[in-house]
Image (cartoon, rainbow over all chains, first blue to last red; front, side, top):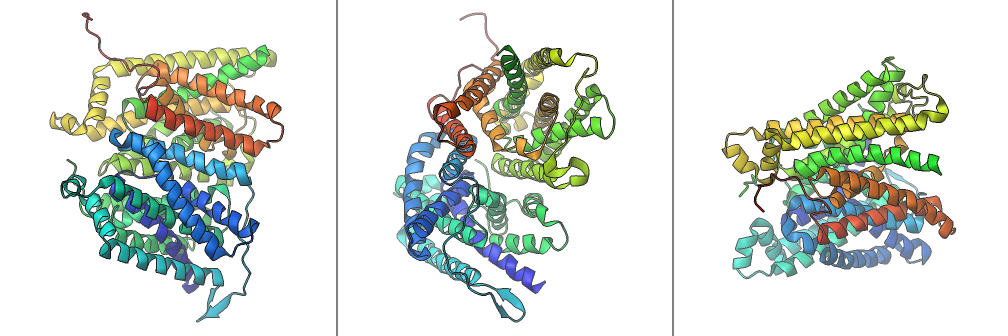
Length: 286
Length: 301
């Protein structure tokens, strides 16, 4: 039980970064991006190429992959989503679906379907109070916590963070107050890309690298973001932890194959009882 | 070669039925269905199981499969849309589709899991000689496709069809005029679901064997591609779109002979990349597709 809870916390912590990316992207761009799973996959393979094939240590490899993914996301937005910005949420969602197909299959084309893993030294798992932990899980905890603190500071203390929150809150008002939304959108993509890259590497470390690795987390990540309230960064953090722990604990009662049912049921329950999520504002359509 | 063309024709027909269903839900009704693959699999499995386990004949198996998928689709739409927006609906359909696929993969007692179901009976399979059967199946597929087209055209031109378009364009206005938007959407999604069930049954008749790997994301990719290429809301367009996409997909098999260095995984990846790129390009440069949606025409031009 304790062990399962701990594993759940790790699963949840892994999802915090992509859930934050989803919520930031939704907040600023106002559509759910279905390509985030594939973006994680591609970034994880980039880190893999630097780490396992060129022999870099994982940390600089991840940093490089994060920068590359952030830049790539700006490029992708410019080519794909910018021309469609005025066409409404459904068109953008379908475009993101297509984008997800492209990205995931670029990874499949380059590395095939077989599972791979990063070149990291294996360390013996250790025990604290009867809970088995390993080094990767510690790295995951450390990296995610650091990234969350950084994100918190960025969103609350920096001018760009304030601008991002302003655009998310009310785009027209932000525009009137002289906030350049194209710049804000570029930064949002850059930050989301970096978060997704780190998230992708953490998933690859936790499980293995394979083309559907990112999209497997898609439902859970969306559930986390919805539970927290789409658009709310704090909510994404709490939502990811809750979904992670509940998913792991559910394996005690339901067959593990159906773990994906948990986030799905979570979405259904949230939509019925509290559509705005835990930390979101009631969404009023204009 | 004739035989190959006949088989291709059958595939095009049931893909076109699937595209018509998506076109009805998304193009006409404005409801994205990212769970298309799962519902398609549900249709194929439901009809196969009704025949293999319950001993139903193929006619009632198809009707049963249509009813099952329609019911599931209607339920999903009802639960989700009671409270919420399109954004969430897309996510939920994606999740439900994935869940259906997992059920097919894991419930060995029912679906034989990864092994798949074999020996699916075909309509009049014991009456018609095997060497002529493909011609019969093609004829059946064409008839069903035309029937679906006729039915959807009738629906689109009926008062209900106008209501559907009104809800798609602006649900608030429709609601203000006293229309029950939720109920309209549930019906759209369920009708589309029934047609997906029909396409799934045809899939089973054609392959006589179904397993979870047949229902991969490529079904979803080409479904959307076919509808966008054909023009959202245009029924005939969806058929041409499906035909074009299937011929493209089949044609890309010959790519292997051209570039022998590619293995089959890479080839599959290239096909999906091509579809993804096509999807985005069409959305950007030709969002209206290549055919127009039916509109009431006035006499005066």
